[in-house]
Structures are given as structure tokens and as C-alpha cells.
Image (cartoon, rainbow, N blue to C red; front, top):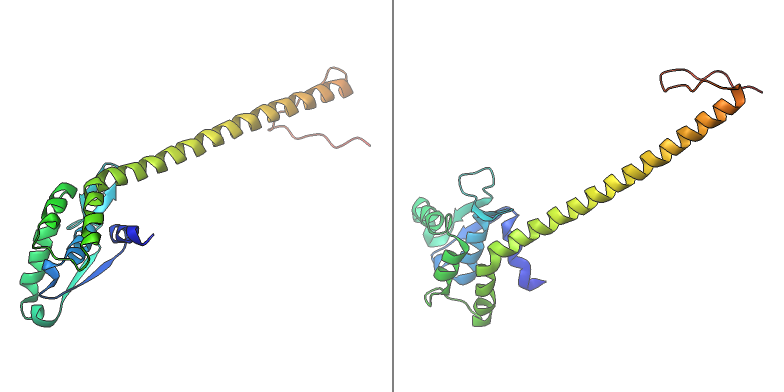
Length: 178
């Protein structure tokens, strides 16, 4: 599960505490890119400047002196990158990581992320279609049972009144005979 924790950044509000080393580290940049995207049925789209924007940048330590410049740099760097562009950027050797295995394990996922998002929306769509089909089938069964019940009532009414009168839903039923 921990290997998929980065997906949280696609749907939660993210507070970015940006310091001078932030823009050289793999995980921080990867998480920033994810925070600046949002998932749609056709894949990832830029969230910056839309109602789906979910990141907040606070510059700290030495970066605080030029907060506006550093925040702009980060947004300009990541806001509009596609998964392929993010992969290419994060693959470079000047993007550092403490555990190279983390970087090696995450990079292929970045390239596949659009397909993963599209698949998730497809799964939801198929599930909804299955539920709709089941509901429609249940409604058809209920209608058939209601028609059979109405027919039984009509037959019973006809038999008891000698040629009878079947009442529609708009006609009130006569009082029960004792």
C-alpha cells in the first residue's frame, strides 16, 4: 500500500513547504507535479488555474526571502507537464533521491499514470453500467409482477361481481363486503 501512497496527491489538498533543496529532490517534485494535476476520464489534466487547484505553497528558511519567485518557479516547472514530460524530467541524474530504488520503482508508474487513471474511470463507468442494468432488470421484474397482480385482481373482481368493473388507480375502491 505504501508504494501507492503518492496517489493521495492526486486528490487531496497539498501544503508545499518549499525550501532551497525542494526543487532538487525526487519525492518533493513528484508530489508537487501530482498536486498540480487532476484526474479525468481521459487522463491527467493541469489543475492550476482551475476549480480543481489543490496546492498551497509556503516558502520557508532561505527560500522565504524570495517566496514569490520560488513559488512561481515551482508552478511553472510542474503545472502543465504531461506524465511523459514529468517522467523525463524526474529521470535526470540531478534529481536526487536518498534511495535510488524509490526512484527506479516510481518512474515507470509515472509513465503509466494516464492509463491507470483512465482505467480507474473505466472501472467506475463499467460498475455504474452494471448497477444500472441490474436496476433496470429489477424494475422490469417488478412491473411484470405488478401486471400479474393487477390481472389477478381484475379476474377476482370480475368473478365476484358477475362481469365486473375493474377500477383504475383513479377510481376509488368500494367498501369491502363482509
